[in-house]
Length: 224
Ligand code: E4P
Image 1 (cartoon, rainbow, N blue to C red):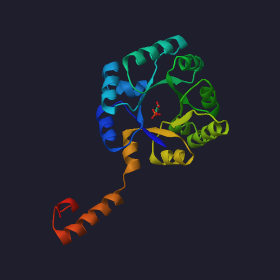
Image 2: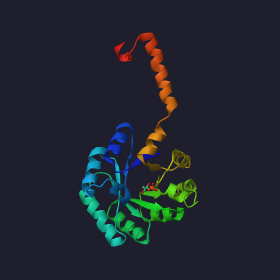
Image 3: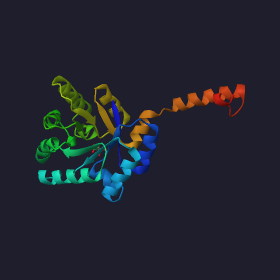
Image 4: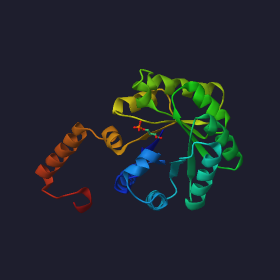
């Protein structure tokens, strides 16, 4: 399962990339506006931090024509591995098919139902992003939706991948992983919570204490 970071904050991205083997970064218009920076300068800054990892950038246009223009403009200014995020609206489904023919990487987003994901896959989406927590907030059982989408893609032999998104806690991420999602995108807070455990730190502290008691402070294996 691929892990991506759902953020446009340079410091968060830098710290996460320094430690974790992230597959990429995802953004949406709300995430971008939080940074209060020039849009394209910010994307270029993100690119310089993540190298050629995937960057998923959402269009703002709500008509097919505007989505196509947004996508072209993003591709013109952002190099490297790029996926254009298109919401699964009527205009979006149409845009996806045209963008696919033009060779764009596509991430279908704002997905709430399995059928939306299946249709997006047929439109040529490389990734489909169901919104787990937002689905939970309407009692729609986000993890079940991810599970059904994953099953549908496997059942129909589709290469489109599930990029589960919108998480508010670690348990949701764990459950979509068990459901077989191909990838997740999580905020920095959740990413660190997934990776850390206080008992791990306590174990390491005890190893160091035992070692120091025998060999003296500051001794590592390389300077024995
Ligand atoms: C990512 O692709 C989505 O835009 C994002 O995960 C939505 O998350 P939110 O529901 O926390 O805003």
